[in-house]
Image 1 (cartoon, rainbow, N blue to C red):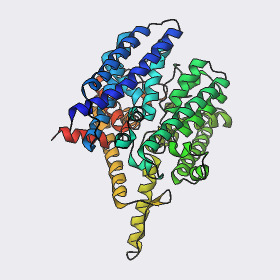
Image 2 (cartoon, helix red, strand yellow; image 1 turned 60 degrees about the horizontal axis):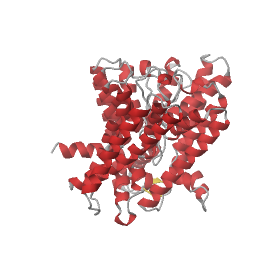
Image 3 (cartoon, one colour; image 1 turned 120 degrees about the vertical axis):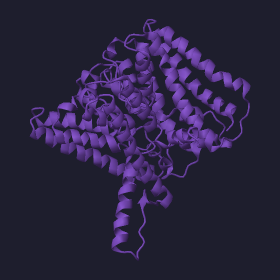
Length: 481
């Protein structure tokens, strides 16, 4: 592995982080040079220098190898999270070192878990930076800066191939550069449409922009202590539900809906159909459960809250309009199940992904079929394409590793003194980049009072989940040799 080349590409990713720090400082200046202005300027300058410095001495633009790709991706996300905490540290308040790092990691991984008890006390510039970390992390740090790389060398494909799982590309015939451009362009257009829609619904420009960034990244950060419940608006909630669901749909399919057969391909997508069907069925079941238990008085309120929370959790956004911790046990089990699977590959959603769940279910059906008819050969298909045995095994290994890491994370949480329900749902929420668990870390709680070791455990789970396990496991395995 060429250390100089690896460091150079990591530095390039940090330039994207520096750019958004300066934009956040600009927001601070617009709102009267609040207390976050100089922390953001200093942090942006530091990130910019660290990012630009390697490029001065490293001129090698050769094709990256696989090992370098893994180290660049893991290194970029790790350093971005570390530099991202500096504005919080310099601002002070609730931000100790651990809390500042937790908030930064939570933002970049789009988890949306927070240690803040009073979000509204933060200055506008820092609030915007907080949302910027989520927006950068939503589409991917590597995806953003890889647009600047020369496509002829294939390095953009090498890097985004590590950051974004191969299963996300399985249904389209596109080069790495085209895939990335369509993904990023769709992400930007969706954000702009979300901003305008929220503005027309009655929100101010700042709330509209920040919540659009958060919803499109499926992060769930809010500028309000009560999250979306603070607006008490069915219109705002409906817009955000639509944005969250779209952001959890494969971006390449969304971006091609205006092309020939693009809309047909989206509507006939196995994964898309399964994802939206799961959301609708869950909403209906939770609504009936809440209404039967007299939770919100009438059917409309039950539907309103169940639809929003189901969308929020199945997309791993983590927004809240109510406290799911007080729901009937069956309803809470439903939302935890939604937090495990979540949206589609190639979106900003976290979790196991609906693609992998479908492959696993169809592989199970194949095994049962072959047991019944040993002389007949069955095949596994997804999006009308055959799934190779290698891809099938990769999916099953992923799911097994995912569950094992949840169990290990929950074990660490219980060792730290967390209550069993919080330990397990916290591990599920962090590796799935969902945000809220149950109990004190639920939709109306936060991670402020979680033990320090459990916070670092949560941060590790967030990064592992956001990079979809294998890059981090590869990095750990390489270092352990």
